[in-house]
Amino acid sequence: MKLKSASFFCILLAALLAVSALVPFGLSESAYTKFSRRALDIFDTEITLMGYARTQEEFDRVFDDTMAMLRRFDQVFDAYNAYEDLSNLYYVNRHAAEAPVEIPEELFSLISWCKEQWNNGLRSTNIAMGAVLSIWHEYREAGMAHPEAAQLPPVEALQAASAHTDFDQVILDAEKQTVFFADPQITLDIGAVAKGWAADAVLPYLREHMPSFLISLGGNVYAGEAPLDGRANWAIGVEDPRPDENGGGLMYRDIVDLHSLTVVTSGDYHRFYVVDGQRYHHIIDPETLFPSTKMLSVTIICESSTLADFLSTTLFVLSAEEGLKLIESMEGVEALWMLPDGTEQASSGMGQYLRSLKNAGGKV
Image (tube, rainbow, N blue to C red; front, side):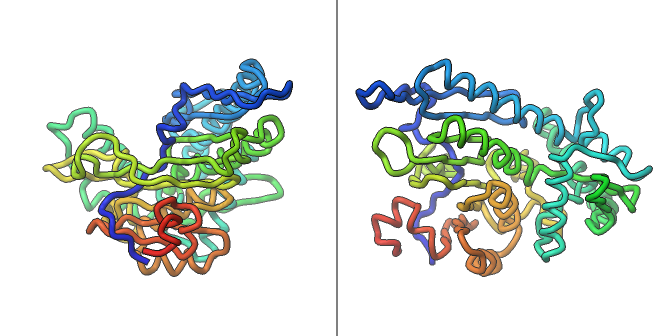
């Protein structure tokens, strides 16, 4: 179905969930309080953990343990830095063409999961596109540092790199937990799924030690059990990706109400640079080798943050028709699209979560 608003969506914590808030509830001896803290040095994004705990000390312990796990994953998935005695993604991209490299379980699990999606025909998100994505990363970083000299990558360089993006050339050995590159010029880029995988990986700990929580890794949000203040769901704000075109400022356009689910958005409005007045974002279409122009944003709701992260990128480079067909074929997955012409598209079950659709009876 099509929505008529011209605004759209990046997952953010709404003002009503402001990170500075402390919300006491209940009068019993087991009363809980809502606490929140942020970390800015992991996965190159802002990470917020909010949850209900008996004391500040209890919450701080959960926060510190969760951030320690995420820092570990950040190092394992890091494609730009080496760490002593760690065969992380940086090491893999430099040595896996020489001989099979034994890698940490976290990295092997993530690559194997992506390979499974590839083998199942979901190839619009290809983590073996590192050769192409690294070129765009270099030009984007240079353009952001020196906007007056921003340039586009040479098409010839992108085409040459695209010859080395066949995921079938990434050979995995589950028994030995190794990865080998049959194509010596292939490299992996797991940015489309790393934060989602990391969010899923910390859930067992959070569910055990602080079941009522909300964690945000940039645009990846997971809501645990319902908040302990009487509400049935966590409320997560959605942001207009074009605020300057719709009155200016940070504008929340709607609210998603849910618990025990993840909400992940991919959009063109956070990681981009400008060349000759046109923005070029980080989500590259494997067909054109340029940033996809089919969407402004795609939001996924489901149980798995890994799947949501993967699908939000996948749908961003598919047409609206192709994306809707894919989502409607999947159980327990809903999606919301913002199209370049300002219209919006929602999957058939999105009305149970999006407040504006619930108020309209799920109809537009």
